[in-house]
Length: 219
Ligand SMILES: *[C@@H]1O[C@H](CO)[C@@H](O)[C@H](O)[C@H]1NC(C)=O
Ligand SMILES: *[C@@H]1O[C@H](CO)[C@@H](O)[C@H](O)[C@H]1NC(C)=O
Ligand SMILES: *[C@@H]1O[C@H](CO)[C@@H](O)[C@H](O)[C@H]1NC(C)=O
Ligand SMILES: *[C@@H]1O[C@H](CO)[C@@H](O)[C@H](O)[C@H]1NC(C)=O
Ligand SMILES: *[C@@H]1O[C@H](CO)[C@@H](O)[C@H](O)[C@H]1NC(C)=O
Ligand SMILES: *[C@@H]1O[C@H](CO)[C@@H](O)[C@H](O)[C@H]1NC(C)=O
Ligand SMILES: *[C@@H]1O[C@H](CO)[C@@H](O)[C@H](O)[C@H]1NC(C)=O
Ligand SMILES: *[C@@H]1O[C@H](CO)[C@@H](O)[C@H](O)[C@H]1NC(C)=O
Ligand SMILES: *[C@@H]1O[C@H](CO)[C@@H](O)[C@H](O)[C@H]1NC(C)=O
Image (cartoon, rainbow, N blue to C red; front, side, top):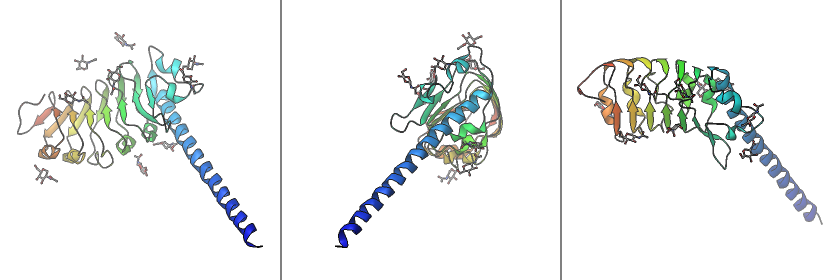
């Protein structure tokens, strides 16, 4: 007689757990999409000039971030996986909130007027495969811990900016790097030999800097 109610209790208990669990998953997802939206709105807020009104017209909360110009989302998870706002003549700075796009694989801000330095939070984005900041007016140094979290990075394009300082030897810790372009900046010192340890590297572009090293001709 006692077994039936206890089995029912058990089922109820399990159902309740399923319900709580799915609620937790759902709210976690919501938080993430909201976080992505906040990160992008923060970027919009840090853009001081947008001559074609690209972000002003398009990046508003009446549509999903996944519908915004230059934003690509994963179909299944609805998280932002690519941000490409290259060539929009935008002036502004990169906010640290951008580092909250925790599913981002491609970050292309090239051919704009972004200034200031790259916030440390960007170096925290372990999902990133591609950083494209070429043709801006960014400055600062590449930190020695550059590769601590960017372990999946395949492309690093910083060409035509105002970066300075040494190329950290620890750049070789980004084992998946295929292309590095640091051309037309103000990097100085020697080209670290450790770069030779990056076995997947097929393109290394360093011309137009103050570098010394074994190899004379880098593009
Ligand atoms: C919001 O963005 C959508 C496109 O994503 C656009 O059609 C709409 O006009 C915008 N609304 C405002 C108020 O700017
Ligand atoms: C995104 O755009 C598509 C088609 O352009 C539209 O059907 C859909 O409702 C939009 N979604 C949101 C959340 O704005
Ligand atoms: C970003 O967009 C530009 C212009 O639409 C395109 O040339 C470039 O290849 C894109 N970047 C990436 C990483 O796909
Ligand atoms: C950016 O500025 C250049 C030069 O003023 C212009 O030729 C180009 O059309 C602009 N691009 C956009 C997307 O507004
Ligand atoms: C996003 O990042 C900023 C600065 O990196 C942080 O202060 C903030 O709490 C984060 N916001 C969310 C919603 O995660
Ligand atoms: C990097 O991520 C860690 C863990 O998620 C966090 O504690 C730290 O504050 C982040 N650093 C920056 C500069 O955003
Ligand atoms: C990028 O910068 C280089 C060097 O300043 C310049 O020669 C090139 O025309 C620029 N490319 C674009 C698309 O603006
Ligand atoms: C990386 O390169 C340096 C200098 O060429 C070498 O001494 C070192 O053993 C290499 N490290 C690894 C982990 O391959
Ligand atoms: C990497 O460099 C190679 C050689 O220059 C080039 O063929 C390839 O398109 C580059 N890849 C990317 C993603 O730019």
